[in-house]
Length: 355
Image (cartoon, rainbow, N blue to C red; front, top):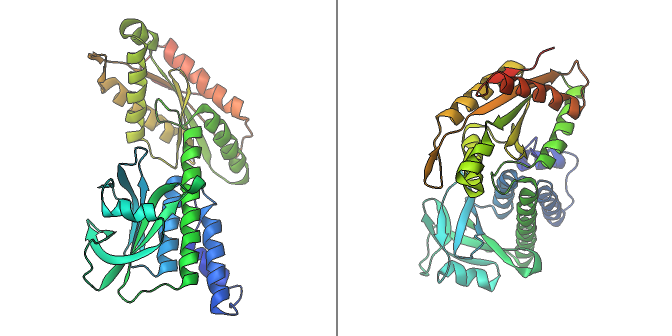
């Protein structure tokens, strides 16, 4: 997926080195323009949230920032990330929405500065009007069709009082974030297999071309693991296709728990076939991972249709480096041949491709 080479603060500092701004307005306009461009540059939701947290913290002079998204049923606000101590972090937390102060605030769709409370480190608007050392800046996230998609809350100094221009600039940033979050969610649905949660074959096709092109420009490795669930047809025949779907869903979840996201591309290639693309990984590293995944699958109890279903995994491993010039089909064919040998030799095994 997309990966920024530098943080927004570093990039902005580099940009300012090109020349000093003529006025405070020019400087603010430059930051706003830079921030909105940055927010629309990435389709990976995690990267987008990290950049948004830092950009909003810088722009609002916030002490602590939280980004929350409204769930599909519009019942809860899911915390996407928090910026504190000069760095973004992930926080798994849900907040009630219906009938709360947050619902009233969001439905107004306006920027509000209110008293602050902290709940597990999340800045939230307080219901009372007592003053304090900090206040809560609330920015509703309004997406396409003027639809509320979430909320940004910022802990700011007690004397913080944004001007009209600053308020409008914050609204522009929050709108760009809302639209970008919508786009990231749409992109995720397009590239993610709805059953297993893994990437789709189409996304694999795109990424393998990119990685092979990158390999030609640099010294490195590219490995691939092609996997197949052994005798999967027997699961469908014995327990039904719904049970088979449940096994595939649990298999996808099991794999995602034990494979690094971001640095690898794990895709459902078709049916019960899967392919794992490993940039910058030599063949022996891919071989070791394939054996670990084989053992995980063998020892796992797939609970479906009130049955304890056991299934094994066969895998073919192949790789290339910068000294070769392979097409995506040639690389996949290597792994496919190795997988065929693994099946031929009795299944539940891993075979590495060789000449």
